[in-house]
Image (cartoon, rainbow, N blue to C red; front, side, top):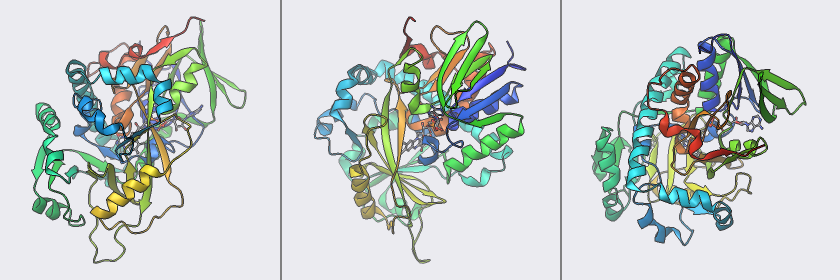
Amino acid sequence: MSVTGKSIIVVGAGMVGVSTALELSKRGAKVTLLDKSEPGRETSYGNAGVLARSSLMPINNPTLLSQLPGLIGNRGAGLRYDPWFLAANLKWAVRFMLSSRPSVFRKTTQALDSLIRLSIEKHLQLLDQTGMRGHLSDQGWIFLYREQESFERTALLRQTLAAHEVPVSHLRPQEISELEPALMPIFKHGLWIKGSYSVNDPGAIVTGYARRFAETGGVFVQSGVERISENDDGTEARLSSGETLRADKLIVCLGPWSRNFLKQSGYDVTMAYERGYHMHFSGASRSDRKRLTRPVYDTGGGYVLAPMTQGLRLTTGVELADCDAPKSDRQLKQAEKAAREAIFLGEPVQDESWLGRRPTFPDSRPAIGLAPSSRNIYFAFGHQHIGFATGPGTALVLADLMEGKTPAIDAAPFNPERFITRRAS
Ligand SMILES: Cc1cc2nc3c(=O)[nH]c(=O)nc-3n(C[C@H](O)[C@H](O)[C@H](O)COP(=O)(O)OP(=O)(O)OC[C@H]3O[C@@H](n4cnc5c(N)ncnc54)[C@H](O)[C@@H]3O)c2cc1C
């Protein structure tokens, strides 16, 4: 069941879609990649650029229940929610909570660890092939703790990272200052996640992979897609222009937009949106000021700060709200205030904040594989906080599944049927 010579449409050109299109094109398929924008202009543009083994730890881990009382006030920088959204997505919320049980958590960390490892290896190859290795830092990232008690609550995190052999160093205040002199001495503990990477311009990396896709003979068409369908001859995508494209197979990689998009094609997708914002700041303005050299996660402040080509990128935690609900800068303002306690941020270097949506299934694992009740439509979306890191691994797994090969990692935990059903037509 080789894909060589097969025509394949990939809908969505974020990190997941571009990586998938590139992998299939390299395997000899005739691939058309579709997106309403240029590749990598949405969620895959504005993230924190972290590629880290530590991301195997989902938010819904066994400590979630004990955190609930602190979340009820809905004022935290790390997590906010729109109660109406939660009420309308109760099925997702209940299943998200249930997935924090130790048995599900263990399966998830195992599955995410294998996907992250595979992906990082592939990213390194792709960055070399595209001449973009210079965008990558191998200095890991640091979790920072302002209070002794908050560090003590990391026991499960530390145990889990140790169980998966993620290299971590416990940092004392002096060591934090030595590693990152730009930080104010307000942190009592740090966890330095080593053997991990970050990039200084995630959007540019997607653009580079898309360029490589074109070099392998792939075709990118900038167009919105209205709906998809399948018949005895294969698959179809109806474009916003009214034109219809046909192919043997079709893959949906629409990230957060997948759920609403698939509704009209008869699929029910139990997925939510963990929205997050970013703003760039000038950071050090004079030569005597020290610059941040790697991403840091201020756990008390509820933000990640990452050095990017555009400036210091301040990214916020989670806002559970509808995909297209209006923006609210409350969390960003809160994060900015906290970040100013930790570092010299300087001035904002953009007029408006950026909003992204992390697409999240209840068990925090993406959907990768054949669409339910389908022969030729495939899904690859729902990569929550780690889709920039795990796009290339997703592509390898999906391409193997499409070719009837056994993927390098167990694909069963990513079966789309976990949370996607197809209504009888
Ligand atoms: C604040 C924040 C920080 C993050 N930090 C990290 C991090 O450090 N590391 C990490 O690995 N991940 C991180 N993530 C998560 C990561 O960004 C996402 O998981 C990932 O970008 C999802 O990629 P994707 O290709 O699935 O979706 P997207 O990048 O959103 O791509 C989907 C594409 O579909 C297109 N599209 C939508 N509708 C249509 C349509 N009808 N027709 C045609 N095209 C359409 C869009 O234009 C878009 O290009 C972060 C996310 C946020 C919000």
